[in-house]
Image 1 (cartoon, one colour):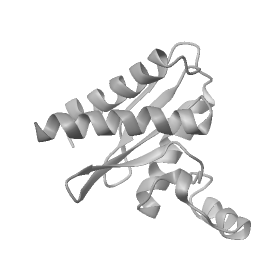
Image 2 (cartoon, rainbow, N blue to C red; image 1 turned 30 degrees about the vertical axis):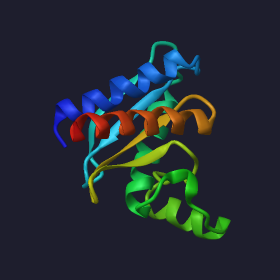
Image 3 (spheres, rainbow, N blue to C red; image 1 turned 45 degrees about the vertical axis):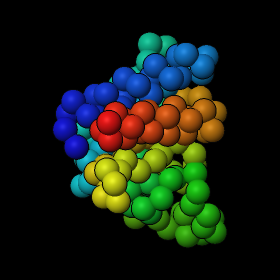
Length: 134
């Protein structure tokens, strides 16, 4: 995934949030190594949302599924959070970014209700994928 791709994903997710009247979001896109490519926080967004957006993206990547679909017992979640120094958030808002069947990164959002966070990044990824297929 290129910087331009990551920028497009973040811009689109932030625009979706604004269009739909969501509270200010932070949106992160990471590469397959879990490193941040782009991270932006909307004006008025709470500072913690930036870290949570990155953590949701990394959680999706580590578990190879959307962060909101992870269902683990609390003790397991606590162990994984300890392993990753709290950088594991099994809550809605982190999704994989794929090209065909290949995972090229992940995107995460935070700042609104979890379902809204996820809606913003899912929509951004879907639009990005449609554009690449055209």
